[in-house]
Image (tube, rainbow, N blue to C red; front, side, top):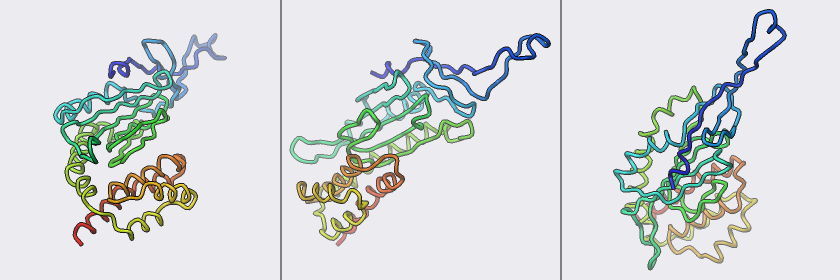
Length: 263
């Protein structure tokens, strides 16, 4: 439940009190340039950050999204509070926008928000069609949009979170209604399967080819799921190549889909 993530937090300056001049000039407190992020309901220190860290609470992130989520009829799917409150994932599903994959298998757009109080995650807004969200924040499914903002006092985009969230949700809903439906209805071209194989980094080529052999793609939805599978299951999240490949999956396969549909 969302209330689990709404615990109060506050900043406490990390000060040095008492020094060699205390007896002469009286007690002093020196600012160290750091501050503690403290969970008020438990008193636990969640992190020690520099003064450049901009605290954005889970409540502030939720409030920034609330109006748009209500307008599109989104409902809460899952809230995960990790590390005693250091990291939080909030997932919402939009039930009135859907794509029927086969039989009773229906996929709805989902919006995932990520936040952290220890600097391990930026403020994240991620949209897509998810099958699973792991405890470490990795998703298994189709990522359509991923936006993040640094917790920095120098980042003006933090004040624009409501607008960023509204744009992300609107674009995602449009993709479901148009692009995903086209991917399901368009038979995949063998040349595009080969092109995707050439996109995949060589160090994960073997498991990817094995996956294709066991899950032969018949349409472009199958192809995008194959690319997402190797990205989430076999690629190192600490490597730039992983994120580069991830960012290319949807736009590239969407382009191929439209090319084939027009042919």
